[in-house]
Length: 303
Image (tube, rainbow, N blue to C red):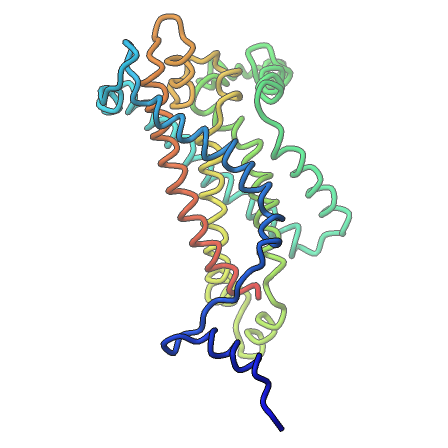
């Protein structure tokens, strides 16, 4: 039987120097992803490049490096430090509490209706932020809020006891409102991905439930948990409207500093504001990189 010449030529062309060439993708297949590249260029890459360029603009309209030199000032460093502090706090607390809630929902033996209610509420609460969320907490835990008035009825004055909704503690509580539900939504698929065979194998080998979680479940879930906490960090680090609506822009956060520099009347240095924003972009990009690495590690166990 005569060998197929076209098959032989394809095999020869696909192998050069002992290495196989990647298959060619027809140009028509690229048309399907063209809208994605256009959208990314217009709303992600383009604005980032414009932000980078404007971060070098001085007050006189020329280009300068002075904006980046001012990033080392006490004002900017304090703003970065406070943003990182509240982001880490809410990411860790939201991650731990959200993981426990997700564990109860996924493995606690509760009725399926409870999981549906929790997932629905988490989907709504994770996207409930900005002015509506700040107003809801003011009406609830403000100086004349509902809960504050209830405590006063029992002889407890929250604000005289040291609590304030307009402090670091108050802002942390507000952020946790959308951080915990986001953790629940993100970690539930990882908990559902734990294979029942692993638990049965551990039990057959004589492992207790604590040993199963210590040596099997937690090592498998750790990349997902850490990756989700990094996602929570980025979610809180870039939040602006909630903190601005709650504190009136007086709280020392990087996002609020950007607003004061770009649109403020007293402090007005748009170039410095753009430079601070570029610093946030770098921090967010580094966080996304770590999240991607951890996410790839966690996906190995879900296959």
